[in-house]
View (cartoon, rainbow, N blue to C red):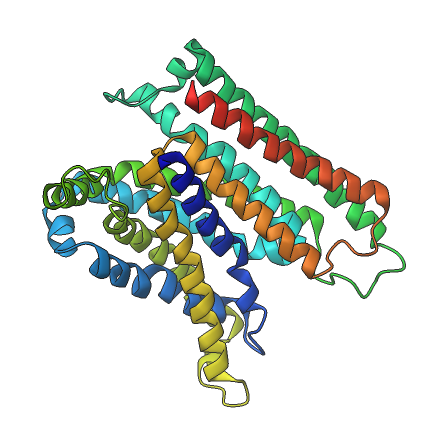
Length: 356
């Protein structure tokens, strides 16, 4: 039952994340940096402390009393992840919902599963599995094999993108005008790798979550682990993400002279803020439910890749809904499906390996 609940929570979070970009498509006459920043304020600054306030008593005391090195490391992982987060939107813009999400999150899945054990190889920690440990046992080898399958799936998706670009070169000049394979692939790869650092941010901030967990278990004995323990950790990690994204978006506002977006009455300001707020809130909900799933399954490779897989599936549903693959050849579409299939297979392999 615990595992089933974990899968359900991860699936809800994945659906929210895979859908969050859709409200942004309702924003009219604003530059990308403007609506991304407004959505970001809700994602990184407004909603996280509200969630913590509603679920964790005295969460501010937990943060204040945490060791400085814990907060610095969690914040730093947030800074790195923030670079991946801000480039994510550009990856989707240039590759579309289906391909952009699949490649970005495929890399995010693979590296998110590998970064913590690599770290623990250099900084051994009791109860944590290092990359050397994974090579030394059957379960770890299966997890690494699953990661390899995931990377192969990403490569095939890249091939599908090349075929799609070729298909749209003639006769489909009106479709996906922003589609740019080379630019999109570079951004998606960078975004996917750096976005995976959020997983390590959760690990780095775990002592804060443990305090919340123990306090709850004292008040609720024999009721398992606290579902919302990670909500306190997210606040610190997302401060790092806010810093990176805020500086970059403000720079683009200056560079592109788009500060007027926020006050230009010729644009639907209220609706744009509303849709940006919805997008930002939906984005945060992915980690709200990830924390619930992690409390049931642990923050191992299976939790992370399960979460990413549901995002990939949801994003591809929206990609089909938006008809991003209409007009491509059968070969192109089948190549895309093969890549998705391999990424899904990698999820199964990693899950089995993690259970051994």
